[in-house]
Length: 274
Image 1 (tube, rainbow, N blue to C red):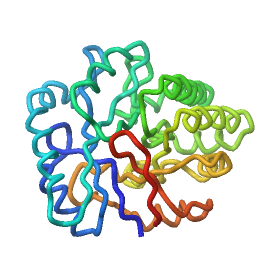
Image 2 (image 1 turned 90 degrees about the vertical axis):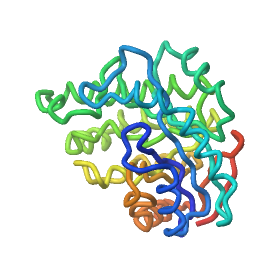
Image 3 (image 1 turned 90 degrees about the horizontal axis):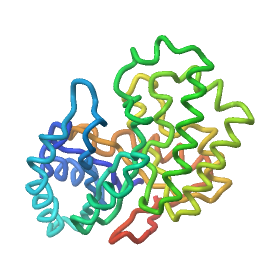
């Protein structure tokens, strides 16, 4: 049984519940290592069109940190971790480092949600006018970006590693089956491994229009051959999504020979069987 969930958001960004409510949901589901990974503030110019939470998050950040820190002193035998999900922003490495220096985070998730200043996971309509070749160019750029990100050494885990498929699963499935695609993914995941990072297996995709686990089977196979450590995350934004469909995630991971996952505490990797 998976007892670790290290990808959680709260009402301080675009979630729906307090840290305390998310924690209680985790306890009820038998989670023993629970990591809060609220988004970091992004620089101006990198915004979602209608649901940008930058100002709201900044205004409540100190309260959020205090609440999560308080939950570390619980009586439920649960290890609570203070993490953060940072959007990869090429050319903004110093901005990222400055954000991370403000607190002693246990771990840092990297979420690649933007290609340049375009939040590609915001609107399905953005993808509808793109043909196959145009979408393939974006897939390539995404995994090339992953290589660049990993080489910085800033991050601990790549979150939802094939989120680029969110609105184009049919085209992505066609592309990922090619030797060219698999070679590029191999390069990206090798960079992640060599940086001492883990790859997240996420149930968030099951809740999205693609209705697939992040990452899919071909990428899982590549990760397994590379002996790339894995972590588990629900990317929960509500109490009902904490540890969402973790039975399916466990089955998915075991199919590729995984029997343990990792998490980071004080920026050091720890393993736990499932």
